Image 1 (spheres, rainbow, N blue to C red):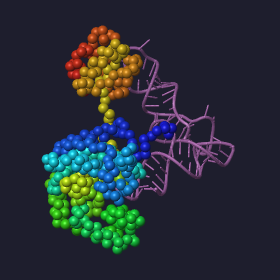
Image 2: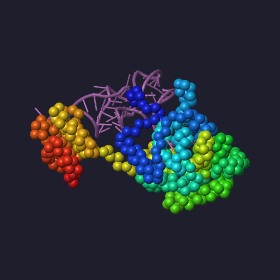
Image 3: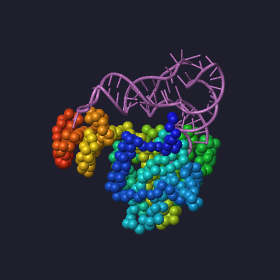
Image 4: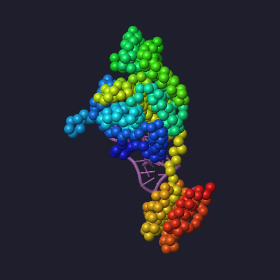
Length: 423
RNA sequence: GUGAGCGUAGUUCAAUGGUUAGAGCACUGGAUUGUGGUUCCAGGGGUUGGGGGUUCGAGUCCCCUCGCUCACCCCA
């Protein structure tokens, strides 16, 4: 290509008609979250680097090699947010939101940034919509959050995705499990792939979802977290599942799903599809009972999730009509005097909610009608010298060529005419 | 970071190593100076991603580089 400038690698433009799917997702999220009592918070795109390194985990890939980190002019280390939960928690603490009536339920949306190699469903700038609920231990709220997500996905037109849940225990019981898993993996370390040997050191639980056949086999009889959960976690998880059943959220337990971020405790969940290549997670989230405290706030538990908008948009792009909105009306003004008369008409009808186009050049009437038709307009108004003198507009319905006249200032009649589809 | 595939017009794609790189769609203008869809005619658009090499001759073959795509890793 000869163009000099492209968007940077992994950054993309969303242009019509693709932007329609995005608007639809936004609308569904707003509507659904609102009905569940979540309010919007708008957080900045940049945070102090420690917000992420302390919450996500120093040894995760995100912190180790994927963050857009830079110094500002005063030497502060800032980072383009790679995810939304940590900034939300920071905001929650900074504004003392725990003093609001409990629980505190918020949602957010916007771009996130990770320096990764782009592929299907994965970008360096990607949009997430997420929600967080603070202050409630009861797994009822975990389940309700999944119910909300289910409603949201139904709204966007994705009724059949795979819902998987798990519990990864708490600070009391997880260490015991990790030790047992370490022992098990160590006892047959030679059967694991190189990546898993690395995971053994850095992120032991990840060996459980390695796809390499040899590893799948080697970890086949590995201990599972559910056998190590303490009484509290066990009860929490069972109750969570009971509520999911009550709410009609169909799901399965996958004892091998793991989350990438360090702050999760107890409940974790993932909603996946098989239609997106290897980037199959559409929604993911879980509970983080220590995160607020770890970031210097009060000991308040939380649950949250995030969904990937590009992935959702890709999934629904084939199912949406993708039809751009068409003008209700195209006003053709033949000359400057006519345009001066048309301005008021356009303004008035737009104020009343009509999508109203006008011509920006004075080509022949034939040409202008052609343009109106190509734009898909349902009606055209024609204003020329004669019409201005007589104080009228001529209208034509393009579907059946029905024509007539209306007084230039009779906006009520215009509305009435245009709302008649003719067929 | 690792690996593979692909780069020709706005877009979808043609062109055995051989004239001046073509077509559909889209866009613009005209046939039609106050009435659309169809049709017909015309036009604008390309350093064949870039650089080097082989050859009498390269869009085509070779090397390098950049970009895109997919996969690994990781993750929404």
